[in-house]
Image 1 (cartoon, one colour):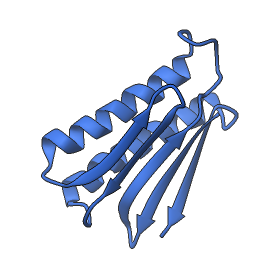
Image 2 (cartoon, one colour):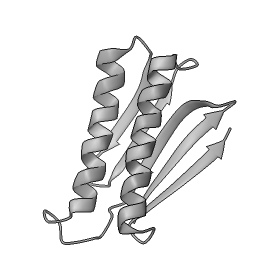
Image 3 (cartoon, helix red, strand yellow):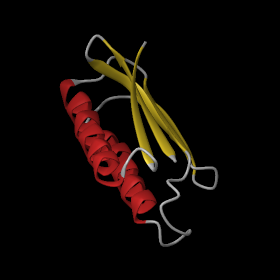
Image 4 (cartoon, one colour):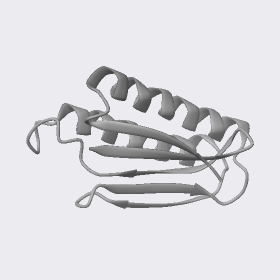
Length: 108
């Protein structure tokens, strides 16, 4: 299962993390993992290219670990990009079930 945790404070994202493989199908055939991966790559690239927000991030594709943390409070645009990412991830979880994708919101 892929677990996605969004870290929030006062309505703003502080960051997020993803861990685990969805396990929907065999490696190379897992459409749930592929969808999550595409959204994850897109959110990293969008924040980097469309905002001036500073963040730290890490990725270990073999272990299926990804994380992003904002250095400062995110701008409106960065917050909106992560909101869009969250909507996409929640849509995947709704479509395929919490057996494959779990979404949590954690106040920090």
